[in-house]
Image (cartoon, rainbow over all chains, first blue to last red; front, side, top):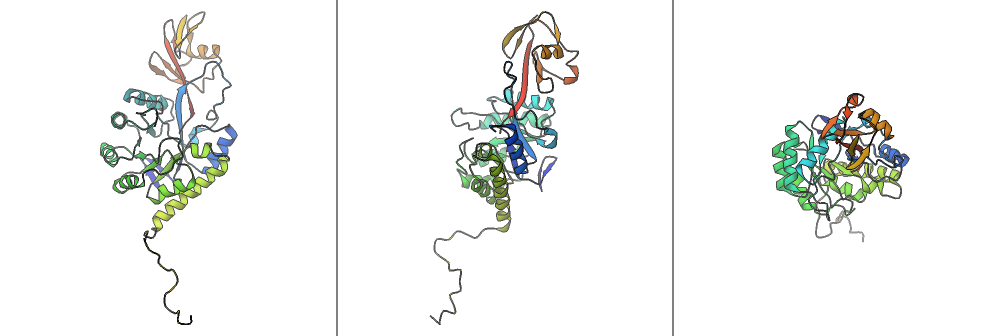
Length: 255
Length: 66
């Protein structure tokens, strides 16, 4: 069982709710993923087009652990403000601290992330920061008291999979808090690989919502994550340079 | 009464409660988060909280995101 702060999870798939084509697909994909955690964002309401689709509007968030992000924030103040808005509305069980430091790569600002985490921890939030593959930052954030760290697989929405497995492994091996791999997952093999490396959970969005069949992909991701976790627990064989016969070398005298 | 909502100027005939203002604008009160002059307003206060001239409102909502 995965534990983050006071919350416990059976599912290791945390699901973002962006970019689904329609509400029905989103609802079915959420069901197929068997996620217990939904991530979403805070935005200004469109004052003119009330019919603008908001697939999230009809989801009963009370059935999930709510995990809003602070996406769009570029400063510490903006990050804290978004968290407070979500908390005020009663949909902030945990907060995904996401402070973008670069518009092109959408990579996080490590210093602003650290400072925002410090403030949100003081205010009593369950804090999970989105970070680059930086083992030192992960350690510093853990020492600060965050409840999980969320290193990226690769930049948001790229679907490039695990860009830096070595650094990701460094983070996982030294962490004493959950490690949620977040962003850049493209297919179930990426999610499986992250779990094989020892990640505790995966947060993904576009890989499911952008798939040709999001509902089927949600199930595939669920299975990939389960397979990766089982593989990690089972312990994979070492990678060798030369071939090792799997059939006995003895008993070939009849040939 | 003239106030600023999401950075735009809106004009109403008189001061309004938040509930009345939302109704005027045809906005679902269950869906919106209201910030009034930088202060987040509880839904329970929508009926009593008054919006006056030169006040600033942010009308926010939760949308899909990852």
